[in-house]
Length: 437
Image (cartoon, rainbow, N blue to C red; front, side):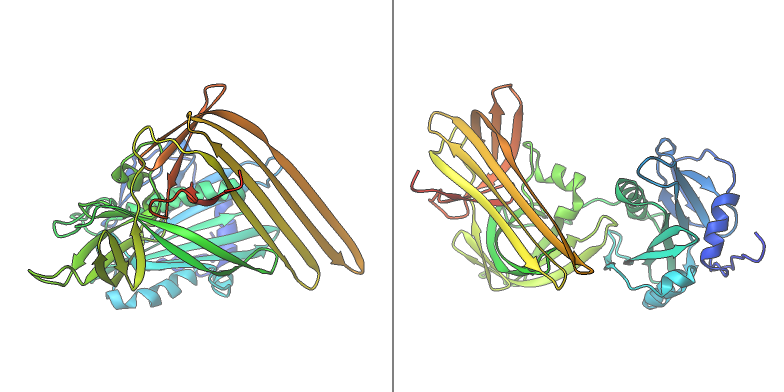
């Protein structure tokens, strides 16, 4: 490999040039078992059928996946690199991250686009940093670096993508995230799973909180939003921020989509008083980062007060409930910059009848203009959603819509206002009832 060398802590001294050379010098494909021990670090490797193979030699354990050239994409490569555990104090994790990021000197100059930090299910500190993009010899390079630290040892992992984007990037990142979640610094560590402790839990039900404010949009403007957010508490200690679909339990939902979930426990109070605080341990990324927050807590009848915000209890629909009316969900966004402007709008209508039948319609519109060098161009598109009708069924927090062909679509649903169907939240979208219909 010429002058490219890796020292005992895995620093690649020749930078990005080494990565480009590495792709052409990697060893031939090797078979490997799913679990792997890397100097005392245990990880679960991607299935060989997914295209990953062990590659290279030296102190860094490496995996490579090749992506062939297509009509839409250049030939690309994805590399996963893992260090052996290094002796270091927990407090030095951030410094260790800087050292490992610097294995690609040009990438170290880039700003961090996305950052996650917290703890793992085994109580280790974890940091995740994503950077993009460096271009070298017609190759686009992006990097995701993960550092995991216990009291005495640290390990670092990184995913390097070379001319990999879109669905290919998402696939490689999902494999890397799964590998990171499987990391065990100690043989006694448990697998990633949201398992409540004996002192977790204490609440039961679905609660909604009205969240309002302004947020920027893709056109350079600001949109007002009003979202009825959901928190579902399981008595044993799980909570979720989305309603499970398809009749699944919260445990099943959290197993498949951990970033919607977390663990909680109540604290404070005493024999004659309710809890005064709630600790919420939320999974904040696909890498298994867990953020811990302690908030003030109290009960207000059937409702909750969390961090001085109202969380109102949401009762489920009785099986066989029917509604009568027309509900409309609308969305609009617009904005402009010095050289462009744009807008998008959409509307979806759902009609429900007492006899258990429904109709659905909808439309969307979008426009955008750009001015470059004194010339202006623009585009406007519109579409109408094909109408659909059939029968519906309400049960719990779900609605099943079965059209005339027999195809069934299941969505989450709840009424945020007790005793009123003036607003329905369906799959997270607000549907207002049109009282004139």
